[in-house]
Length: 414
Image 1 (spheres, helix red, strand yellow):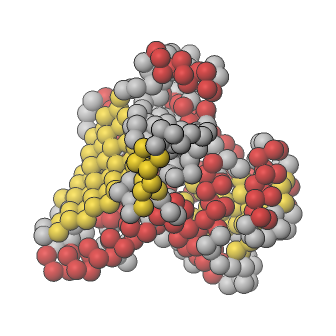
Image 2: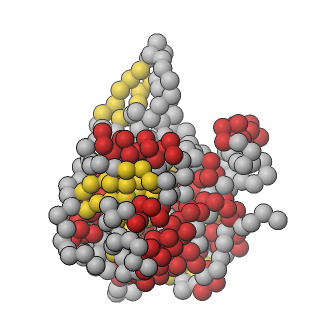
């Protein structure tokens, strides 16, 4: 292990797509960090991300043609795994092997949500990280959202301290559909919108219900009930749109993954009091763009947040024309009319504070607020919800039947 704390942390990215670019922009607001490497399957994208890191003043970033080359370079201390879901376990195996064999001095790893596609994969990700002696962080940005952090602090300090702990958290996230084809392919992604977005909702809700400073397992899941549906993208017109946009691999006429999911999660606190999470996610929402809605309720108080309820709005008449973009809000659906604007998406969504927290924890050798253990807990909830949706029954925890469970939409084609 290196001598800690280190003056600066050198970060290498695995993956060079949409989420890697989000993390890169967020790193501008982080001290004591250099982005020194990137590797991905696309030479064009990794070269572009390396150039972008240099343009942003994040250090001398090199594009590597293989993960092994980046790990062995001696120029990377910590790895951010931002590659597609179906690659993450192989990436973790490669990091584990390189560290155990003495070919790499990497000492920390962070993984974008979700940690894995199944409980078995998630537990193996954790085992590999710990067996290699790596500090590990789970990149769940909504836990670090600025309104979440501020709202939770106020609620627990003023409301919960005088009238009792919060007992109900609601979380919803909706947009019009993912950017990349692998998200729409159940086998590669691990599911549909429940896997892609419910991972945010259940973890931010669990975080809001957890007393500040208390271990995350101080609130314990006792049962889950889930529902999934195909509301929009299986309709022939829209299924054909997906095929035209992404190619024959995305075949929603014959191989759909859910575009809507709803969850009810029962929990218990340290005193045995019942707590609840209500969550919903959708790829079938058509509005200004990505919408995140959060609520936290207790005996004499409530908190709420809507990401599209912005202070800044702009109006564009029909005379204002131009190409499609996402310059106002993520997953932007229009370029005309009255539009909300997120002045600092990376900050509001939590990416800046998330990266700041992970860099400081790794640099100092401290345990992050979110670790692979939390990533495993999230996957356990998600698989319980998929199992409930498949069987039509509530899944009660502990649930050993989830150890080898694979959601229907992620099972191999016959």
